[in-house]
Structure formats: structure tokens, C-alpha cells
Length: 134
Image (cartoon, rainbow, N blue to C red; front, side, top):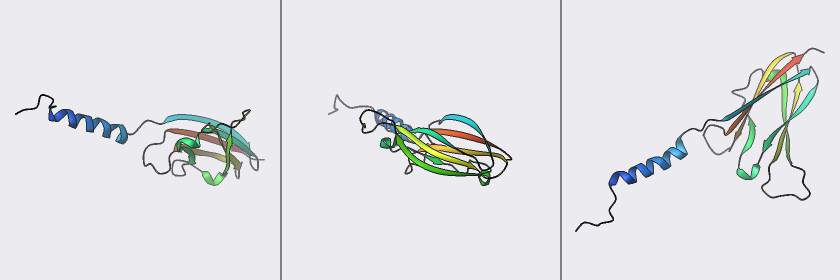
């Protein structure tokens, strides 16, 4: 006796394929860029919006960056947005301190990622640092 509620076998396969595609398909990163100008020995702090409660955070992507020997890039920490009262899960900014070591052009690429995932970053920020002599 056949069941009236029997679904075709391919409906289950399509459902599983759709679920897998949602987790496996690489997402295109939202890309932004900026340029700063420094002289040798000068420093500037940049800020990137971050929400650590989501698991995401900014990381310097050294393999995508260029001429990092010309600069020092230091993580200056996360700062919550100023509010009358602190809010759990609210975004803030990740600060990076960029110090010019030598003349030339360096490119620092920052990826917004979850460290445990091996997928494309959710966001990418490319910072070009043009460094002049003293």
C-alpha cells in the first residue's frame, strides 16, 4: 500500500543541496579602501567598525598586504561606542596604529573574519600608506 504523503526522492536531494550551498558557497566580501599619507616616523590610528559578539573580528592579512616592512601595524584594541549605558552585543571600533618606518608605499589588507571559519572574509579593507621622507 502506497502512502499518500510520500514525497518524490528528488525533493529531499534538492533540499540538502540548497542547505549545503548556503554553507559552502563563497560569499563575496564587501570591499572598502582608504589612503593615508605619512612621513617617516609619523603614526596614525585607523578605526574599523567591529562587533565581536558575532564572532567576527578584523585581522591583518599579511599574505595579501605589500611592503609591510615599511610600516609597523599594531592592534590598539577594541573600543565600544560611547553611549549613556553600555549595551551587550553593540558594535564598536577596532583600532590599528600605523607607524611609518621608511619611505615608499605599503598596502595593508584587513579581513573581517571568524577565526575558526575557512571561508572568504565577510569584509575586506585595503589601506594604502604613502610614506614620504622627513
